[in-house]
Length: 152
Length: 177
Length: 184
Image 1 (spheres, rainbow over the protein chains, first blue to last red):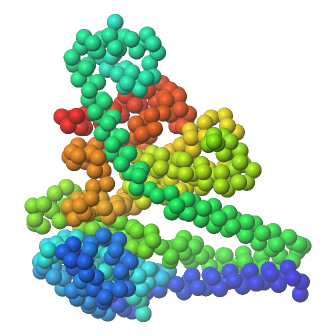
Image 2: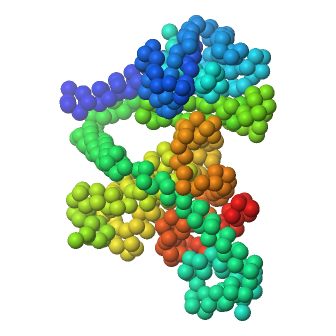
Image 3: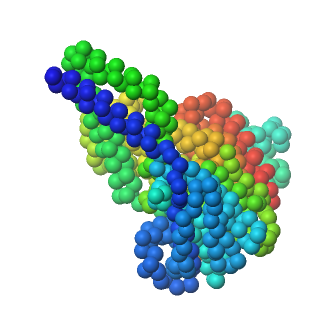
């Protein structure tokens, strides 16, 4: 077989596998594992909670002097369901998984103060990725939530 | 002799030194005798100072070495990528065309069969390595900011605290497609 | 003895990267400031400033010295900035702020990047008023205010006549004045 023909078949095979992979990338997961890390950020001291080591680079973007993990909670949320997480200060966070496409999971997220909605957002995250939601005041600082999702 | 309207039209250009001698002299003469236009001149000059101050203060913050390093990186990366692509294309597509007839047909069939998933897959491919993307936000009247930080690939949604307390709404900040 | 811009350009054109580095060091702050005035976001301004010099490097061989180097450079910068601004206006959810600006609103960060303007309210109104200008009006204000460029040079950068520059400046200043009201 000529060298060029070999290259041609290699190229075609690669394209085939890429197409198959892309097609396989679209599916609806059974459950989405959602993790909420609730963090208190403030300028009252200079301490950095060692339990937040994995988030350190991201949290440093916020330019507070101290960060303390208040709680960490994970829940497996069915793809058509929702889960509610208690947040300090009488607040709650509700998460509804939307879909999973191309290794990205879409979530609808609501932050509530009591029964009153404070913020709704629909966000598309890389699988096992996270985003930060922050700002609500608490205990001399502000609450920072790291919200991550993992599709199994 | 200039009147107030035409003086004020020319005042900016006069301050900028862009009028010819005759026009410039006419403005100068008018300003000597007109309190209102003198005040207009004062305001324009103050505006200029405030504008320059707002923008000038940023300059000293930017250090040269990291800036130059980023520019160099762009030059190196984008040049290398293009050259590699040209070399690869040259090597792959030279030679007898007939050897590509069979794989070309296979490719065409694959394209037809995989059509929409290929298109949507390639369209979304870039997102795999990207930030979280926010599709909608509703802050129920509160101020909210969206931040993306390149180095750590962090997406931050920041909800401002209202001055008057969380029960009160301020300006409408509904953002959605 | 310091080389002129044109001498450095000629060295770049024959492949001397160090000459391009000298040009960048001469103009990077000015280019950044012009772009910051147009985009009002530090991250975007930095991105566009770096892109400006990258594109200038790619095009350096086509620069014949017909205009001054800095007007040629600013032209590239302004075009990229205006395109970026138009893209951002079409996609409001791509709006970004730096955390300094976000937290400053909540008085969480003590330092004020625009600390030379002591009157915070004047500064805030001015920033808002500048942002309300169209990209073309903002461009003339920034180029004239920051760089003190002549109307001729500004026209060359923006691809318009001196008369257009004059009338855009007049309009932009009037608009800024009316928005600032009694603060001036």
